[in-house]
Structure formats: structure tokens, C-alpha cells
Image (tube, rainbow, N blue to C red):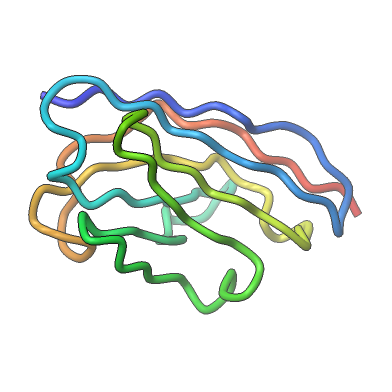
Length: 119
């Protein structure tokens, strides 16, 4: 079992930055690929970014060049640095863990953190 707790969300103006954190507890964090997803009101949840256990990263086209995912295994934490934020980035952001890799179904999810970008 893995427990995930996100933090770092908030209200920011367009063009600003936020850094989300996801703290993990439970089984060996370093064995898991970690991902960030988001869900805007009235929309389906979508993939944002993921990092494999070997630090391979992948991003949605909509955030490529603006967001950076990273992990710190000694701290059991994954981060999402979000720069040049746009109003369309407004959503609840979720952290997730996947033992199989960056693709496929994720096994564990956090409770989410709200990000609101004002225009």
C-alpha cells in the first residue's frame, strides 16, 4: 500500500509559477513510476506528466516546455514545477503511483490539490 499526499496548490496569476509536491509513504517509493494528472470542472481527468523509476520523463503536449516533473527518492517525494501558467491549467491536480511504469493504469492516488490560474 502507498499513501500519497499532494500539497502546493493555490491561486496564481497567469504567467506565474507554482510547485506541487507529492509525499509518499508505504512501500519502496523508488520502485514506482510517479505521475501527475489533472481534472478541470466538467472535464475528464487527463495526464500531465510522469517520471519512471529510472528518471525517464514524459509530458502532455499541452504542458511540454512549461512544466517539469522530478523525484527525490530519499525524500519519497515527487514534484511538479509549473511555470508560465495559463488559465486553462486550472484544475485539481492529482499525484499517482504505478508499479508497472509510466503508462497503463495507476495503482494509488492522492486526494488532489487545487490549482487556480487567474487571467
